[in-house]
Length: 458
Ligand SMILES: Nc1ncnc2c1ncn2[C@@H]1O[C@H](COP(=O)(O)OP(=O)(O)OP(=O)(O)O)[C@@H](O)[C@H]1O
Ligand SMILES: [Mg+2]
Image (cartoon, rainbow, N blue to C red; front, top):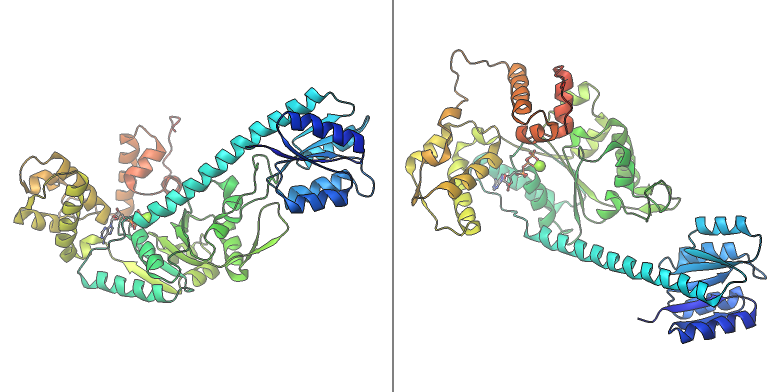
């Protein structure tokens, strides 16, 4: 690849001499002597690099720099300044010039500067290519992600019917509620991929996983240089989801301050990137999910009522697995055949007692727990039949009232949290994972029960 270079300098001799030198070094070089000529040349062909004299008649070099950085962001600019121009140089570097040279300079100086720029451009382009490939891969993966939703019970048939309706009305916001592991995310994907917007993005955001300090920029995007670390323009979730679906997972964990901003973005359908001035039109459907009782959170003022009304145009509740035992048999069969393919094992028979045993079990982790159990059983099972022994749940059976068992929910919650923390060496991240909740909600619960960790963790 020959680097295409434009020299804009009003000293014709200087420009021509430099052109000759750079051509000998195998660059593809053009010259212009006025700003008008320069812009004309830029319109005619794409350049990789511009060498710009900052003192030009008719127009300030700094203004030219600003304009070309905006119009041709992938072109780099090296500026040339006269003596005593340090303030201008500093301003130019702030405005995005990649390097500067002071007149008079030796040819070797500019050669080195161009070679440095060339290296940078190469790396940057490779990086962009990788980024593009990455986003292509993820859309491809997105399509492959499992969207099979199994269940024959009445509530599950109702869930699927509602999902179908939601798919038909692409502008309707949907709220999906249900305990952890009941399949809220699958249902969200089913709605998106069955809708007319199916070829548009499905952008999944876990509201509790976004760190507070980056929150606004993650959702709204930012412009280069708007804060330390903003080295490039970046699209936020709203722009990424444009035309498609924004899936807000664990909506109850969304910080209160962001809820107001989200509401405004939904209502106005216009956003500004952090540090930006342009208003950007956005249009997307929101599917929100939660395993909390949002009404309770509204009462305690942790969740905005107005936002809730915006999100729950259509509500889909997925009941816990223990309330629909008739789904256990089809789910079990589905996961068994699924894992025999994944683990490359023959499909085992299912012992009749197994289904009955599973139906007695409480499944606090719902379908996810069943799925994990089947995977584990399939890995360790060496016979041709799966039986209760492979599932190792006999000791865990609960749900039925037994005397002597503590049934106080809050007390049990505290115990479970303590147990999980203990088991994970007081690492909150791991404990939260074990409990099937987010780290933020673990911390909130710990605060509620006044559970303190003396040891420094994660
Ligand atoms: N009806 C179902 N049919 C097939 N697989 C299911 C079903 N329900 C849940 N699953 C599986 O269970 C796992 C958990 O599902 P998902 O992530 O959608 O749950 P969730 O409700 O979003 O849970 P959480 O609240 O913890 O995020 C996934 O692997 C999913 O494939
Ligand atoms: Mg989920």
